[in-house]
Picture 1 (tube, rainbow, N blue to C red):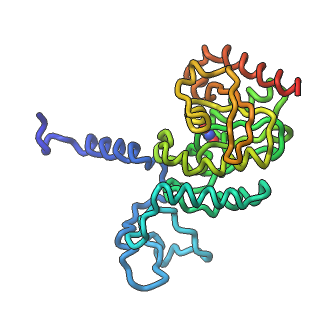
Picture 2: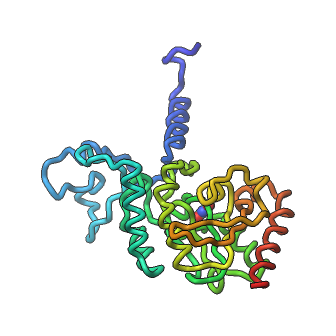
Picture 3: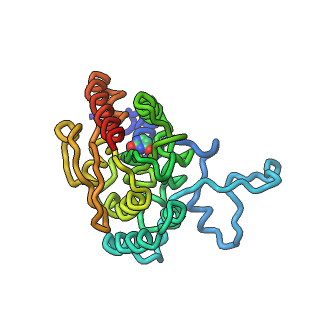
Length: 280
Ligand code: URA
């Protein structure tokens, strides 16, 4: 066994970086480290940003990087309360814009505290095709739109192959609106909390077909596991109001990037989607 003295600084730095990555810290928001505990402990308000050196202070204050600091005085909200609050907020919305604002204002999903942006939807509200993916990743969290990274570019190409684009005739969203740390799969509690908003999005935009991209939306929207078996078979999503919408589970584009041999099956699913939309 190695003694502590035998671990080199390099190994220690590597282990620290690995730990950061596991915790979801995968992006530097500033060049110098900052002690946010010392910063928050300062009594005087407004507290200066710890990195603001007098000689380098900008004319207009830069917004501080968003850091998750749990409020010890805040009463913990239970999962049931969070879901209840989401249901109430979603039910009150009568337009896509109202729903977008309600999601942005919602504080019941703990993922929001660690995210940079709320990622709601992109494309044409009311398009006959709705694509529902898993959750924002790093690029989506930075830009505030779903599917803008490599997987998103592949999704755009797949949609283009059946004459679809977010500029003209498809709406794209996710079952989660905030990036999970380290891009982990959202937990059942997180998807259950966001579900009322997803249901309301479907009810308000009334798509004729919904593509569920990957195992996470398959499970969140239909309670079904196993995308390999479920893909390509039409099912009904029942929303909170009891309305039913046709949904086709498909592979997630990130999976297709890793396993391009499955593009053949994805192409078959895209054609099924397109055929159904053409039939009306
Ligand atoms: N993967 C998803 O499922 N959704 C996104 O928005 C981006 C990547």
